[in-house]
Image 1 (cartoon, one colour):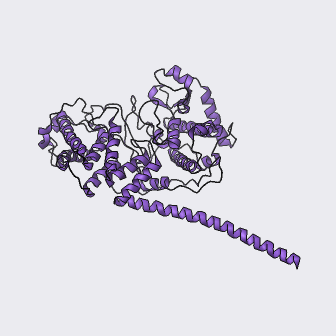
Image 2 (image 1 turned 90 degrees about the horizontal axis):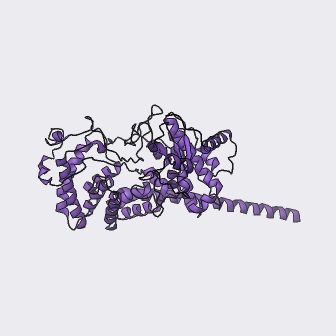
Length: 509
């Protein structure tokens, strides 16, 4: 397909970049230019991580300075230029990974070229998009302002709906990584796991991290390497090294219309991320532009010794906690244990596959057995069993539950977690804190994440209590630092006053 003619936004994007490289002021000015330069914008994927860190700091500093008002800031040309510049930069990085040039479209071009898109005229985050390869297909558009807006202003009452459907990614690094050539197939926006600490060997290889979510709206191919056929599982997983589910086939009376097993890879919190988002930086003295704390370069973390599985770590940890943390259940335990016996066998089989769990496809008989187990979970959950609520929520959030494929599966999963958390189940409260910290199933809300982390700690969750203690200590250090700074200023004023009095005495004498 021949290259499209340049648009006005193409010229503006190139002008912004060239002015930034040359140290020239951008027309109208740009907020946080000094902090942007400290991010070292070298057009690498890692630079997007540094930008995401900066955006999180900007958000926290605006909240602390009481100027966190989206509508007001979007009227300020310097703030708009800041966000537009970051969008242009992210598009530049993404196109480079495709070995292409970014091609920007304003709403006029978008409506003309992609009439099927539903665009809101006065939505700042929808007024431009970048095409990052030469195919010209709609799926290769990136509305780069969306993840920037979510990172700065998203919260439980401020939802960001993606123009192209689904959830808006919670940062530029995540958004760009999910659109790389190694993630996307030639025809669809397909799914790939992004796991921690794998170093890129060339521009087409990703630094895979546990803070990435993945989604898939398409079906996996019936390739012999990815399809576990009916004939294989009707012998049912009874090889010595595998788990047998055959004993549960008498449960399979449910008609299944879709045998695809799909999953999301939610954004994963880690201790460092939660501490950074929980500890509020020192107050700014500038009422217009908050003084940013120093941007810390990303720290390389040691490779985990834990074997990575195809299941998101958030849920593997939940399954461990359901076994290791005892929470008395008033009712529904018999049903929960029956369902757990079946579902554990599925999880063990999935864990042994060297592929994402969405690609492990079972026979209709096995899916029917699984759905029967999910119905048992649902009955136990409705009776008030919080363990059943959490297990059921996990499958809903993975889009593998009873509402799989519908628009309500994530909402249903979040509701079950909330219900369990409201019953003071520390496992549910810890899971809910992770979901809020990273925007999994809910809009990212640091305040709510911290609240549920504290609740989990109060109810005896050891990991949560340790995290709460750490960020309390960090806050105390910040408070002490501020007090020492004030003390130093008072001491300097006192010394100055003593010197002035001494000089006055000398003059008088």
